[in-house]
Length: 174
Image (cartoon, rainbow, N blue to C red):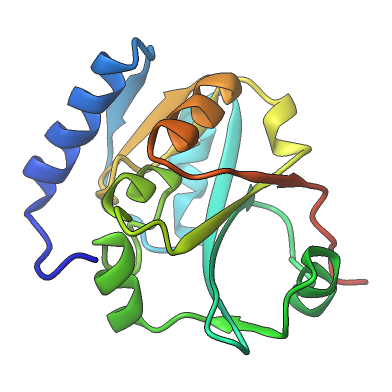
């Protein structure tokens, strides 16, 4: 659990140090801060690869999940919970996000799993997303985007001590 969030430069530097230690190649671009998928459209236009969103979820029994999915998906949360054998999902609070992943809303990314040293969050990776190369994520700050290969994302998640659930993500009808 994280008590205080270091500044964006420190979070980003720690991420890049870990990527170097894991011998993971990456490329980062700077851009204006973005807080939503919709606001990211200009950034997406400049980057090839898969664009993503990250849903910090809490189930009815208190289990925590990070669903990393393609940006365009309208996730059917009840169907996803059922598929994963979990009680009903709701979105985790900002306070819980800070406490478990050491990040504030708007900068959530699978890279935050490195802050979950208690391993209380279960990462769920969109199987279709992993077919796109590269994948783009915030480097724990929302004014940059970092691209890595899908296999390197899985390697990163495992190096953080998490076992990713790789699954097709159910979409809302219509």
